[in-house]
Figure (cartoon, rainbow, N blue to C red):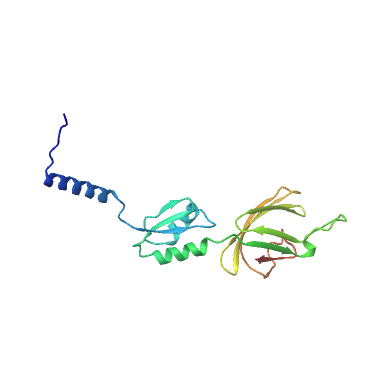
Length: 185
């Protein structure tokens, strides 16, 4: 024997309308613009956007993707900031004066130190062990951080300078006695 279940049309309609309203109510109603990152991580961009954008919307970060609410007033500004920051690292060279390097061997020592933006380069220059990090500050300047340790007298120094590209610099005489030039590629 087969049992039958009698349904009433008005209850069936009410049930489906209630189910539909629950599903729509649980869905995220804010559409997002997806911005894919290529060189920076979402965590790095989160720090930049927190400081750069006033009245920042609720971002969502996932791997190399940032979700920005599409109705955000700052969407164009946010997009422009991300395009400016999400660039490949630049290559740099510090070209020192020939007299900066003292060599007492038959081997010639180059007067060029190669750097990559955001990476620390450790090298030996005369009796100094130096750690150099370069970060882009603008199209024509960079921030150069140098930590030096003198092997002879165990002196430690930490210096930070904004350097103009392709200009002869004559400060930092204890590290570069004859000056240097910072070249950005």
